[in-house]
Image 1: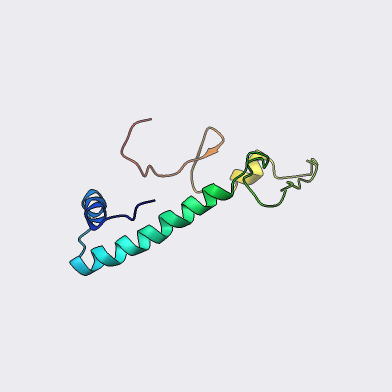
Image 2: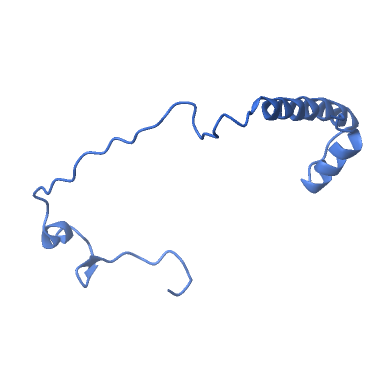
Length: 99
């Protein structure tokens, strides 16, 4: 694979609206080349007989069973509200857009 050129780094910097110095162009070209080579090496390791995975070890979600427990009634929950409307908390509008 060909090394990334200074011109390509300068082009990427312009697209990203980054101001880079001549010295940084050389530095970033070397760094980006190492990154691209590393990505290419990962691609070489991938084999057809190995299925793609999102994690290196299997993940299992642990959920507890839903159990109905006593809780506040609607009136109890709204009892400390400074303002309520239609059995809901009323809060000041923070956005100017209409719903």
